[in-house]
Image (cartoon, rainbow, N blue to C red; front, side):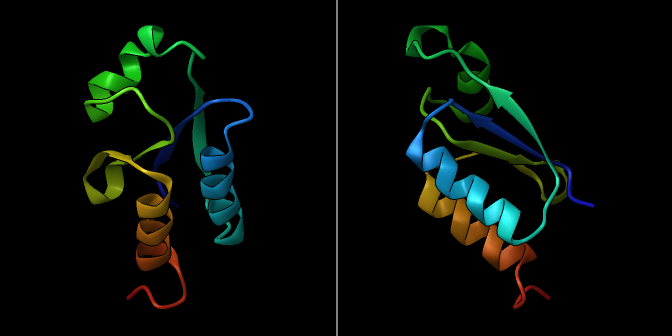
Amino acid sequence: MANLTLYELEGCPYCAKVKDKLAELDLAYDSVMVPSSHDQRDEVKEVSGQTGVPVLVDEEHGVEGMPESDDIVEYLEETYGDSAS
């Protein structure tokens, strides 16, 4: 089972895109809801170096804080999708 954590914000369309991919691949993950104010997103900044969401952490594969929904979706497909080795 994957050891995934997704930092997300309620109503964020980019987060929804990542959550859709996680559901499509039937991956379990922990969700961390972040404050709506960028000034209060210290935990996300510590993990990824920036305050935007979504951010994915995949401890099993050494991913400590991947930002950008398109990059995350591509990573999940490559790592956990049908073509993953």
